[in-house]
Image (cartoon, rainbow, N blue to C red; front, side):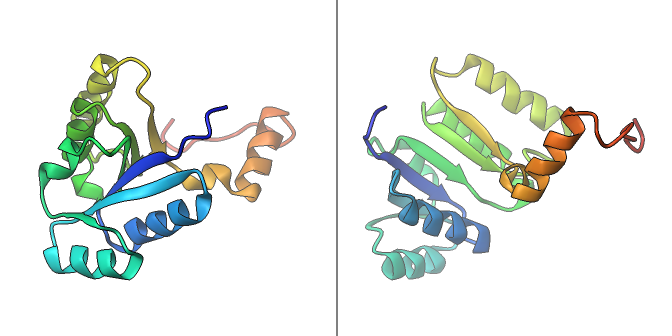
Amino acid sequence: MNSKLVRVGIVGLGSNGVAHLRAHLNSGASEIVAICDRDRNLVEKVGQEYGIRKRYAGDSIFDDQDIDAISINTGDNDHKTPCLKAIAAGKHVFVEKPLANSEDDVREMMDATVRATPGLKIQIGYILRFNPVFEEIHRLSVANTLGRLYIHGG
């Protein structure tokens, strides 16, 4: 196993973005290299509070060669563009849910992943997947102990 820290840039500094920033700071597996938000005042505030030196309010974060991965925590309607820019820049990508708000946008994002640099890791943040309650529900459903599952509209 490689013990090198993953160098991360956080895009979107709302409550979710700051929560991800804190999680990275506490993980021991990553290092926050840069932060980005459209709100320059928020970038400065969060940067000062957490000691993050590189601060962006635009697309320059995607060109930063010190960043291995981009964590996208923008508003639900704004995941597609930074995701596509991060993939095009050859960065690993974590994008919060929902991936996108239209089927066409999801297709465009998925097509970009197919064309991505080989070995690039792209993940959608469905955090409940890691919640012990949902892990147990999944285990029970796979073991067929819950009976027949009904999917509304399916």
